[in-house]
Image (cartoon, rainbow, N blue to C red; front, side, top):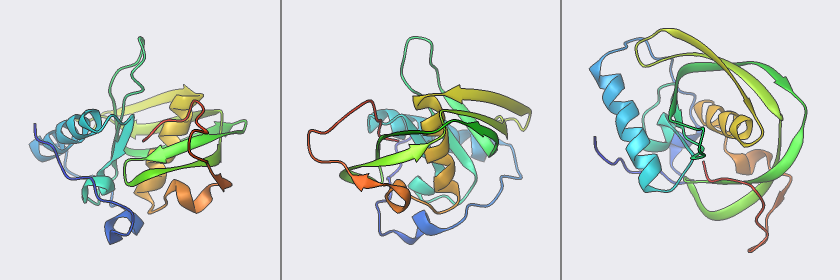
Length: 162
């Protein structure tokens, strides 16, 4: 595993649509492993491939709680969303800023695992928020594009840096 450089706001890779993953082999496994290590090293809870300059539809998420674990989503699609909640978000690609974003409270996502097998999972609360945040990256959208307002320094709630 290796640390990858996280691209920052202003890099054109963050504004492009990622391509579907078609080959499920060692290159993808290495990418996912590197993304996870990079996310952990940066103290994030999620990372999308475009954030490391790779325009493929792959994300890693780990909320870090007792029951949480690393989730890898390849070619993910949200198939249902419920509720609405506003909370703060940050982003490893947008350092030193946070903003309020309205997201669903509950989402169900269909994806593939690192071997190409179909998976479906449902997330609630901060996990749902993180899923939405990371999938936005796959479509060239950042939280700053949809935030309702900037969070002031020290105005932190349960939001996470993804």
